[in-house]
Length: 206
Image (cartoon, rainbow, N blue to C red):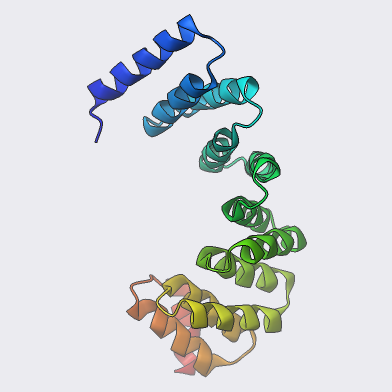
């Protein structure tokens, strides 16, 4: 674990290297990571952009920029950075999952479904992508598809509380209240905090 003093010394060292060799993409990248860890996001953005400008293959730079823009709530930039990342690394499933999640937040269901599908195709074990796919189908109004995806998810990851929670929501939307209660209870038993408003809606059906 770096102390604040260690971090400042590391930053100073990277800046020294950049002063000697301004085109060193790795030093700019390392500087970006150090700034990001300190929460100095604007400085991190500048450093990662410098790294990308010096190295056309700076895949990790785009990944970290995407994360920072997510922290800042700039979803368009999240999509843009992760798209550039997957152009460089087409097998990067997490990049497609990030794109899908950003589109889901933007209420762009079709785009979310497409990106999340690509993520799952590349890595069928990304439980979070499956979980977001349930929500994307619910957002689109395709309840049957949401249930189908949710059942696949809880079969694959039976201990994933969020998956049970989202499947409960899908069953609730299909008026299958017993199954909604079953999966909401399962989510809670796995330590997931089910939304109090959802629990209140389930209560009359117990």
